[in-house]
Image (tube, rainbow, N blue to C red):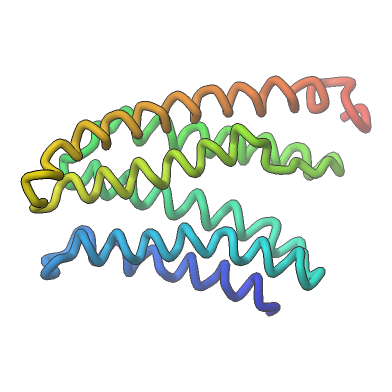
Length: 187
């Protein structure tokens, strides 16, 4: 396994650590969970950079990298729902979009079409990560000057939900004509 794929696998392995820290009875667990989540989110850029820089882009990496992103975000959202901190409809909407776009990408791959991450999709991921971090922190004891963090959490989650919807439609708009009957390869 090359270095970029090792980084991706390490990101996936951080997910249960993150969940234990967030959901378990761990002193300062939310703070440690934010650290684990942040490391996993930041290394998303690292594995892609390493793969391109060292010309080590692999089919395995192209599969694992977006899977790691979706697993991390899904685990965080489900955990927040479990903590009664986040509405289930928000988690369901975001996770459903991820499955739908992944399905489109799989259909495209079966037809030999490589689907890059579109700018709206990248913006959606950044918004989701920031929203989750702030959402987790809003449930901690904070200094009085940071007491309004919940408003920032709602605002960022609203942006994340909006970008999730818009970017999902963008993927369908771009890919559906290529994948519909009579599209590429006539399947």
